[in-house]
Length: 174
Ligand code: ADP
Image 1 (cartoon, rainbow, N blue to C red):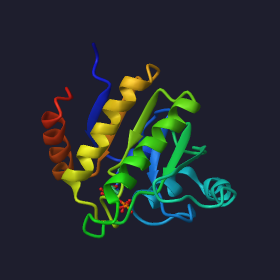
Image 2: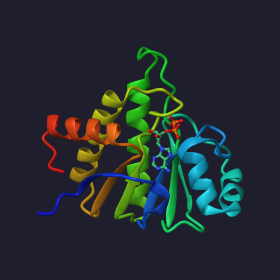
Image 3: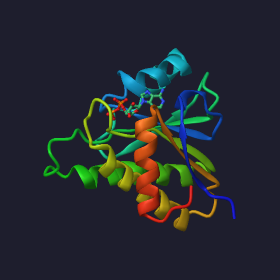
Image 4: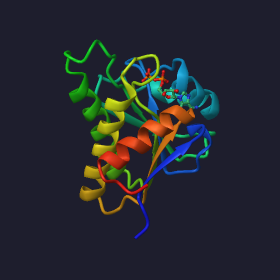
């Protein structure tokens, strides 16, 4: 059977999948990092739709169209800021991934691409975050037979290597 979970290096904004996930902030009005790249790729209509959504709580997710992006939808989630690990960061990051997968099911998304949520400016350690991301993907595959591809998109080789190691640790074939 083909592996559903894939690890790739590259720019998430160029992927022609049903949905790409944005590591957004609570305002949903755009920011730096992957958020800025997604808004640049989608064009100004994205921020207009985002402005109508009333923001997004940490650990939650909201969906919009993809506009000028090759992806049909953007799922915006807000991961936690890392404060050392004792402020519920792991539960919130799990909740971010889980919320994205719930929306994916609701919108019949079969292919979805994730960046390393919270691992940039928000400072979440990559290894711990990768274990959560991959664990949530495994659960989603078990619960949603409609999922065909879950792509984790890494911006650099180092991050990709961490995801490979964590996938091996969890016994996920990639
Ligand atoms: P956060 O605020 O949630 O930490 P960032 O956007 O700062 O979000 O970083 C999240 C991750 O996305 C980082 O690992 C960063 O290297 C990566 N990233 C930045 N731009 C892109 C892109 N165009 N495609 C994929 N990943 C990206």
